[in-house]
Length: 222
Image (cartoon, rainbow, N blue to C red; front, side):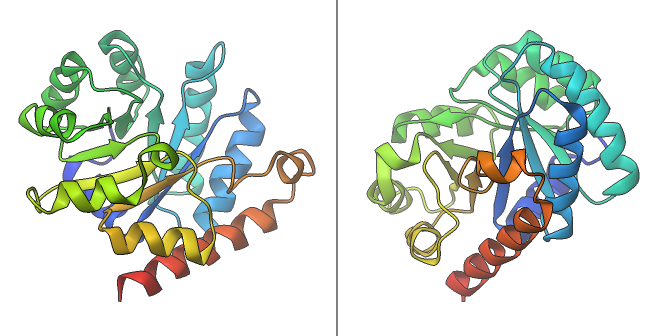
């Protein structure tokens, strides 16, 4: 069962403004990345369902986070069908993220009061997702759709909470452009975890990069 409900998760995501997005087949590496992000101020982490036996890795990581990172809400990304969503909810996922919008996933998550953030590529998709109870919608892929979509959508639908993912970079210029456009938060993957740094197990780099990115977001929100 989820450790944090929908409201708690949205508050964690909203307060920091960033959700790291990461996958690794080695649970020990994933644990260290989660801890490095937690030490850097992150409070919501998206583990992506990308590889074989990814759910087994997540099961280990979520237990580790409960002890070592008690305020971290562990979520799962790349979810496209309700069966996979249900599998991860049983393993303790606190939120579900997908590259697309599937209303059947919304039903599964709503029943458990778990946040479902679907990937949307148009104003209409965001609208349909909101009707299905999705409080936070993912604008994806962000680098393709751009800040103009966010600004254009928020003009007639200012209540919308949007998370942009895809091509987001931990630089002041990039993060500021998204925050100023009006996003609720950003999702950030490979740019936050360069493969060479992960291979070298340079967790201090990850922690410092998280602190830096969170500082840029806080500054842009002022």
